[in-house]
Length: 229
Image (tube, rainbow, N blue to C red):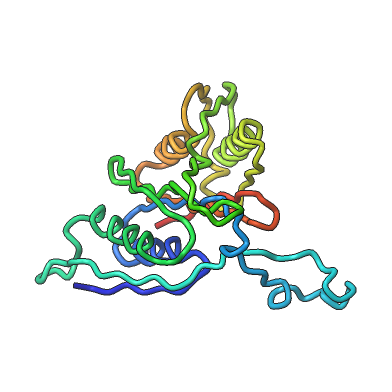
């Protein structure tokens, strides 16, 4: 058995990045929408460098998930020191999260060689654990036109924003890759998650791309960050 331990505002996301880096797996991650005060930390005093410009307590607040510690064990092959089944490892991670006091519960979907970690429940404003649908389950439509991959991503964010009334924006992406690729696609009746997976395949099916969709509880918006594994 190997042990993986993290302490982070987003412990599941942090553990996923470590597994991707360690084994080269593609594991996508999506935040729930944090709204319960007990699940959110105010780090304004720690991170803002312009507090002197505001009266005491008057600076715009910087809020992040409270997070916490997360630790779990998983089995590896005695000879290779590698896990036999990536899905089993990720499920053990999600089980550990469910057994912890950390905010958010997640489910796993596996398609081809991609594992998706999807939020399924989070505390509401009163602190009651309630089911919650992922922002990437949103069904979107994109008109047919020639676009770079970056423009497709921006259009996707715009479509999600219009349907859900929750702002979604592009964060960090491999710019060179996303500006070089161009294609013409009309997208109707697909989830945002399906659109992202298909976009990655069209860019280059040999390049391992993954995403982390992070929610800012202060601005109440999502940022889609894309990285190479």
